[in-house]
Length: 411
Picture: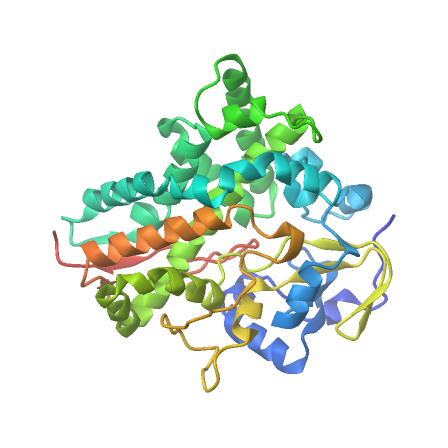
């Protein structure tokens, strides 16, 4: 199977995903949605592809049986064309994120027991303890950068404890995964190599000396129908759990704090009624999704999507951030406005269909606890200067602030 050659000169297509586009993403997506829910565009690596920007069409595309998550049939041409797709050799191969049924079904079943509601709820006391510990470190300072002091390190600490990664390697893993997720370049490949090398050695160590952690359990798991994870699948699963298992939450927290700092009246609502925070997390996911665009999907056969003919080998990407602003909201409500009191904020921030994010319960738990602790401990949290211009991640599929400089009364 080969990637379809585009008949239209690629430079004539709208360009998406560039640093300038990402800096003004909501405005650019709104312009595209006003024209159509699906567009032929030029992706950041210069290749043509389809971009879904509407909510209903996003749900259709994310669950479409003719859109494959597996790049393997296209791997040779992807490499030769210089496309920045994370292939099997990158260490992202061998995991459920880049697999189709029946392999995807098997891999997901082998990992899913660690992310059940009861398993996740058991982590709540430790997540809360860690949240308070991180706030303790800067509460007396009167100002800090929340990305480096709180919204970044907290999710990494949680996933490292869950997986059994030593605390002294958290900074390394955070640096590698941030580069891997946001830099489609030689630095991305070097970061993935470093992450793979470390996790491979860690898995070997846990195979010899298993402990009570998720990686040790994944090594030992065996299912009567599904067998067990191969070495390649085990490494690929470990890589994706580290990368996707914390980066989404980092940006969920970061985007939520940008929204609350920009809308202090909404923060006051949550401080006065913390029971609203779980519902507010859904609103933050709708209002500014932490994963801006889905991983690339590949058309396996010709079909029609949004009135357009998708040819075999065409690539389709879903703008999850755009879809949230297009999701149905209550009558007389504006989807472009933040409302932490929404009763049913709909979104596709965690995907849709069989590839719905397996770690969504953990991300929701972490966000709920982290926001409650921060809003309670620092009731006068505000931008370090008025009208702060938030710098966003300039590349990659994720969306979040690079810095969150804030001030507050020392505690």
